[in-house]
Image (cartoon, rainbow, N blue to C red):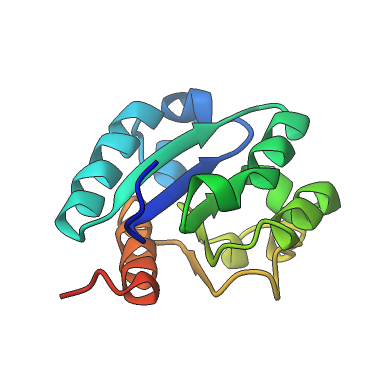
Length: 151
């Protein structure tokens, strides 16, 4: 395990394994591996080491969050639809012990009413939505500033 304060967990929730099959106007038309490739490049430019995790299982997602402080120094979190209703994931995030940026590919605040609710409000240092894949770069910049890897 790295002792440098530069590990960032990038957590993707439900339906990200089929990202390329979802509406490209909302989600960018990339596969999860293509998105992670971009994130890896941006992270490397910022001196960050990305650690990727995706699950469609709420229990597995919570389990990863329970171990997050042993795994990473900060996190980017896109829990998909769980963002809007999973109090279990919010509780797991609350005990995770690492600064977290909430990221959404689409502009969740300009969509259906139920998507405007985030159970992570108050638990994250910032929310970035509607910037497509570039939102992850923005999130990494926030994390880089928090961890002091920004030059």
